Image (cartoon, rainbow, N blue to C red; front, top):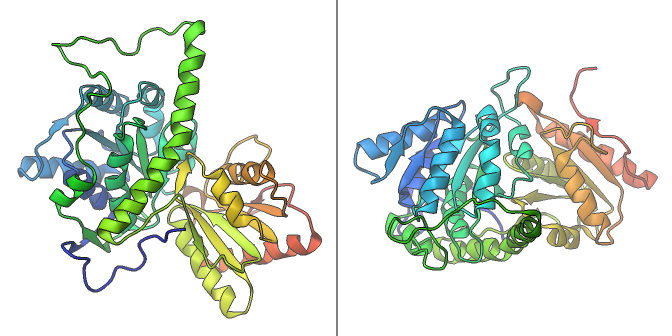
Length: 409
């Protein structure tokens, strides 16, 4: 399985410019280098610098795009759906309550098969009001039909947004793509990253003529979003489900081709020290860096632990994950969100548990929730989670309730 972009090398890959950037600026750079045609963004913390940077680029002549000033996130998503329907390359960004205000239109973007790309600086949902990071906002959108990709570091934010345009606009996909980056942890943290020359980005993710699908054109009128009666709606939704499931092939191909061209390979999942691992922790986003640090610490103590980072959350890589974890003695899942009222409060845990159980992988499992509302997670916390996981493995059973790690009783 392909590795992510590790620590940025001292020498840039051929032709790439080494810069310092926040995650927000990385998303804006990627949108510029992909030569987007239309941007519609409503500012919200901690995403606002994406909107500001793109507006600055357009004002300075660095990007020839239309910036649509809208009155809400609902309108922002409506605008980019309409822009994509004309064949334009469209981009937006949001966070938290903004994503919730878009929620109705998320379904419409996916249902109309419009290849919109959106960056989401992940942030906790109200109430109570909280502007800090967790993954609750993205989890609320997990069933809307979007491809969802999580980023671990600033370089991945840039690379994932670039890949998102190639994936979304692929004729075998034609679905919107959401690129998640941890609010503040990535959105406001400066890291070194490499920018790819725009001509190479456009060679990798060319703007495709939409001859394979009707677009809104006054000279060739079409109707979109019509009423679907019961005798057609079911079939349309089945086609949409199949398109999302089958998009994994295009996502993997995009990651491999990106690696061949630019030296950083990507896949659906990223294993870490997994070959002989007995106890494995599954996580997503910037949290995966902490899990890797904990794995290294325990490995120095002689404990056979490993990790799997879920990079592509939708479509969920169930077959691939089950294959990776089939030899583990126990599997833990670290969530930064709550699925209220479910059989487990960990939403990622539910996906992992179903994936393993339905594919014949039966091992003790533990669901951990930590870091809600921006609560700090430390490497020592993940080390302790591994110790709890090993204890359940020795008992030969799974935890029947989610462990809310680090919460005050």
